[in-house]
Image 1 (cartoon, rainbow, N blue to C red):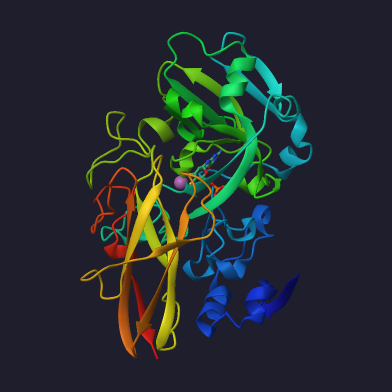
Image 2: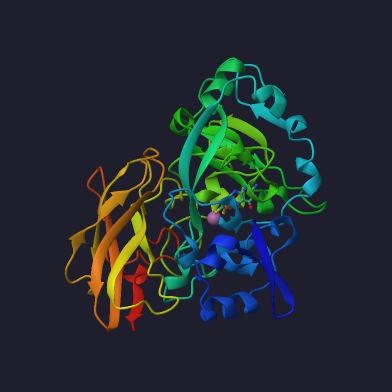
Length: 396
Ligand SMILES: Nc1nc2c(c(=O)[nH]1)N[C@H]1C(S)=C(S)[C@@H](COP(=O)(O)O)O[C@H]1N2
Ligand SMILES: [Mo]
């Protein structure tokens, strides 16, 4: 059940759990009142848990992440590179058509047909490549995300491998899986410039899904319904929404979003195909509570947050209450939903009156440790440096 209150001139939906717990501090209410309104396609989301950067970019507030592993769809971030398609595409999801190319028997499949090929379910971290961009000192261009352009969600759909098999198998010479978004390209606009079309290495097929369900519900338009490509362990951009074409290709697509966008390069440099692209995610963690949005009471504080890596499970997390001088092992809580999901961690600490700098540092099963500093790069991608993700909190 939700309760709605008026903040400023706009109606704001408050989850009754939050309201009952008195969890909304005056600071958060003030921010909600200032926030831009939610766009139509996402108006059902809980604005009090979100930061609305623009109609195409909506972030989860740090203090709104809970401890139950899965991020509810109502508070999950949204990122559209171009305007979301018309809501009518999701009215009859089973009729949505996917064009399949680069297989021995290319053709079209409706979602209804895909549902008969096989079913798998997987929990993954969906994270924008630019999550943490707001911490870069050079004001990297793009949305100034803090920590909330990420969430752990459960997908259901058909394994991509089952689709390939049903269509006679992958054609000879194929090296990539290329997914195309179903947004309408306005007449006169160069498709290559605007299409959301991404290529990932063929080996991603082993775990990829074509999903029509998320967090136990039909996939909403905002998150790519009727059909979405899910590439576990890879950055958000590779998880193409409103999937209209799936091609097994010999080369990477020449669409701008692949060829020059989402490339790691030095500050001031232009994007180019030879630079590393945003595929597998790096090891990362951050603290969600305390969130730094307001003071905490001195005494015992349960520090909690999330940790994950790309294709490797996360192995451990350390927490520091002195800005990274000394560290203690945190404990994972909750179910382990597999190597692509994040783990929740907790460490109870005593915080005396005063200010504290809380940080976390994750290690994955391959031994990769979250670095202290960000990797400086033009567009502010892949930020996993722990120092910038610190929470500054006052106990009073
Ligand atoms: N078709 C399509 N797919 C897309 C995008 C898009 O704009 N169009 N944005 C990508 C980016 S950059 C990210 S981070 C994720 C965001 O997923 P979400 O909006 O479900 O949170 O979707 C990816 N898939
Ligand atoms: Mo993204």
